[in-house]
Image (cartoon, rainbow, N blue to C red; front, top):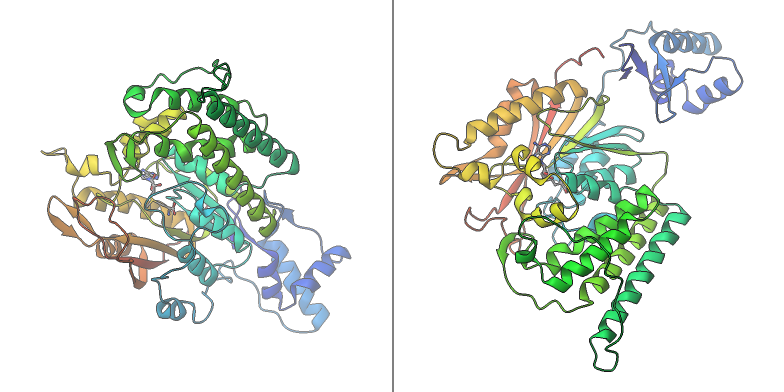
Length: 479
Ligand SMILES: C[S@@+](CC[C@H](N)C(=O)[O-])C[C@H]1O[C@@H](n2cnc3c(N)ncnc32)[C@H](O)[C@@H]1O
C-alpha cells in the first residue's frame, strides 16, 4: 500500500489490487486495456496507483465476472508479510562471503573505505523486497545498496551528508546514452595523448614538446602544495578543467568520479585509511595516464551496468544530513551500514578529494556522525555512547514514519571503542530501536576476514560485525 504524498490517501499497486480481487495481474491489465475498468493515476515513475475506491470497484467487478463473493475491502486490508521463510533463510546464510568477488560492475570505480560488500545488501533485498519496491539506504556512501537494488528491479533512494559519496553513488547508478559514452571515450583518448606527450617531453630527444596547455586554473585550497608535487597539481588542474567542460551532466559526474578516484594515489597522502604524508615519486605524465586508464575502466563498468539493469528502475540520491532528513516517499525496505563511533573519519581521509572538487568539506566535517574527531575530543564537549544513542533515536524515529508498517530495516554494524570502553553497537541499536517502535527479528554475525584491517589501528581491530534486522511496528504518518 502506498500513501499519496499530497492527498494523504492510501493507494495500491497493480499487483496488490490483483491480489485483492483474486485475479491474475494480466487479467487486470487486460480489463484496463479493454476499457472495462478505468485507468488509475500514475506515480512519478509511471507506475499505476489505484485509490482505495478504485481498488474496491475492481474487487466488486471481479466478483461479478467470476461470480464469487469478494470481501469488502478495508483500508488495512494489505498488511505486508515477508515471504514465508525469509528470515530463517537469512539466519541460515553464511555471511562471511570468503573470497567472494566484490568488485563487479560499477562497485569498484572509486575507493570508499568501510563500504560493505555487495553480497550483503543483495541477500537482504532479495529476501525482503519485491520487484518494483523502493529500497532506502539512509547512509548510502558509495552506493553499494543502490546498485544492488537496481539490479534486483527495485527503485533506490540514497541519502548521505558526504557530497563525495553522493557524486560516487550517482555515477555508479547512472545509465549513459551512446553520445555520453562516446564523449567520455573521447576524453580518455585526449588525456592519454597528453600523457604520451608528457612522457616524451621528459626525454632529451624532444625537449621542445609541450605536454599540455598550461591554462587551467590552479587550486587554491590550504595545504595543496604540502600534499601534492607541482607537476601533479598542474596535471590534476588540467584534467579537472577538461572534466568540467563536458556538456552532459552524467558524463561530467562520471569523469569527476574518475578524477576523484586517483587523487589519493597521486598525492602524498599515505593511503585512503592513513592521513599522513609520504613521498611517492609520481613522475610527470603519471597522473594523466592514471586518470585516462581509470576513466576508461569506469566507462566500461557503467556500460556493463546499463546492459544489465532495466531503465524503468531509478535511483534518487539526496545530499543531506540524516539528522535533518529530506522529505521522501514511503519506502518498502531499508538496508544500510550506518556510521558509528570511531569507525572512520570520511571528512579527513577524503579531505583533499573534496577540496579538489570544490565541495564544502568543513560543513560535512560538522555533520559527520561517528567521526574520530568528535569521539576523541577531551573534556565535556567530547561525544560519548549517549551521543550516538541520541542520534540513533532521532534517525530511527524518522525512519519509522518513512518505512511502511511491518517492513524491515537492516543495519550492518560493528563494535566501537570510546575512550577505552568497548561499546556493543548492535545491542545499543536494538535497545534504541525497541524504544522507537521496532521489533528486532534477527541479529546475525558476520566474521571479517583476518586480512581485513580495522579502519583505525589505534582503536582496535574489528573482527565481527552484526546484521541487525528490525521490523517497523509503528503506524505510518498520514501524508
Ligand atoms: C559506513 S559508511 C556507508 C558505506 C556504504 N554502505 C557503502 O557501501 O558505500 C557510512 C556513511 O554515513 C555517512 N554519514 C555520516 N554522517 C552522516 C550524516 N549526519 N548524515 C548522513 N550521512 C552521514 C558517511 O558519509 C558514510 O558515507
